[in-house]
Amino acid sequence: MQVRDVMTTKSFTPPAQVLVLMTALMLAVAVSFEGLRDMVMQWSGREEYSHGFLIPLITLYLIWQRSPELGALRFEGSWAGAGLVVLGVLVFAAGELSSLFVIVQYSFLLMLYGLVLSLTGRRAFLLMAIPLLILFFMIPLPNFLYNNLSAKLQLLSSQIGVAVIRLFGISVFLEGNVIDLGTYKLQVVEACNGLRYLFPLVTLGFLMAYFFHAPLWKRAVVFASTVPITVLMNSFRIGVIGVTVDRWGQDMADGFLHDFEGWVIFMACFAVLFVEMWVLMRATGDRRPLREVFGMDAPLPASGPVRAFVGPVPKSALVGVLVLAAAAIVTHLLPPRQELIPARAEFGDFPLQLGEWQGQREQMESIYLDALKFTDYALINFRNPQGAGVNFYTAYYASQRKGESVHSPRSCLPGGGWEIQAIEQVPIEGVAVGGTPLKVNRVLIGYGDEKQLVYYWFQQRGRVMTNEFLVKWYMLVDALFRQRTDGALVRLIMPLRPGEDINTLDQQLSQFAARLAPVLPAYLPD
Image 1 (tube, rainbow, N blue to C red):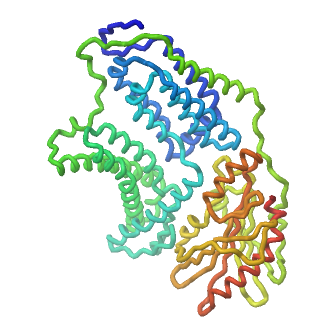
Image 2: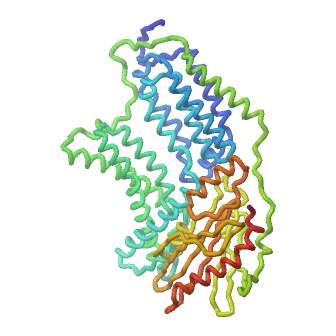
Image 3: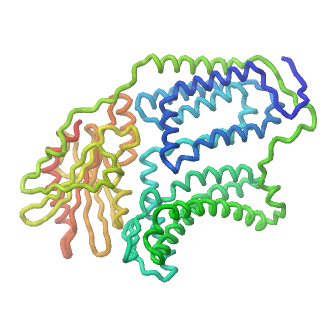
């Protein structure tokens, strides 16, 4: 082992180790290329993820900050790193077989972390652990988590925004995500849910906590506070838009002013985080200036010579490179995995007569078609001779692997102003779908004095399920072993009329489900 004294502020890395690291990185990118390309496309096409372009640069800067300390360490390598590379390749295989890009993206991080650990060793890796952890913030959320989070933030932002508007003495009515000002209605759509601020601000909050030279609990408070700060400030923004629309007209809700207010809110959130750090310092008797507490300095000159240990490339790193090379060769030699799309009947041919129930087809507005992104759907109002009505809705997805997936009514129903008053899973006696006993989510919802009874279930490749997370699990399993991710949501709604016994609705919905069940398999294939 040769030791050199390097009389400079720059750390010294042997050329052979740089070559190994660059080769391994290129191999990891080659293996995960499709998933990484999808990630970059989301950075480009969705404002809430546009900060993703900066995150790799931030990680490199933070590692460069630790260069004097890294330069003083011997890169001993670690076999745990090689094992992490193997795990990353296995996770990539699961993502590739299931055609789920989010799994491929996380597998890339596992491979990257394994490469760094296998080359540098445990001590050096721990110095870079936090900068490397920041890379998690560049990966978009899985679609079903994003949809649920978006729906909840829309509702919360609407409610707080209305409270702000009422502080100015303005009469306003809230219906789900729609703020009714009388002369104009503001709809708190997905673009106003706060996620475009939340994701960048959470990343920023993590960085500020990292640079905050304070006890761990103070850093944790700063990071955790980014979520409520974003929600409150975005709600204040919605309230301000409502007030300006009431005072100066609906043009205030669109165009430049709308976007400008967004930038102001983001910068205000940034300022609030700084104020929060100052308050935390003063409240605990810390009188240091904020410039000293919040440090983003470049590496300081070493007080003495930086001792860079130059030795052979660790065998663990070479094994990691070989594993990635083998994965890259196999990935590019195998033909692309094709998803199987089963034959099925179109909902345009769905019968409008189910026993004594007569149906009338309805059309969904384009705004909902664009948001739901399903392959096919049916929206039919059925009525029996006694006058009872059932709203039947089903949405079918031929593939759920590329961001399009079933939306749960738990997140969609409250968007129209309806509140879930009770929910349970119940079997429908004597009813089976494709030979599987039918079990449904039974939901009682209310809107003022109105009440409705909802039955819904997920019908996915021969399975009838009520649990949203179980749906995602079987989607992964079937993508791996059956090359299919198709599936559908089925929903039935009946209004509860004044004085009507809810048990009567249960009986009628069960009777309708018994008529519906034998028809569905032709449109929702097993």
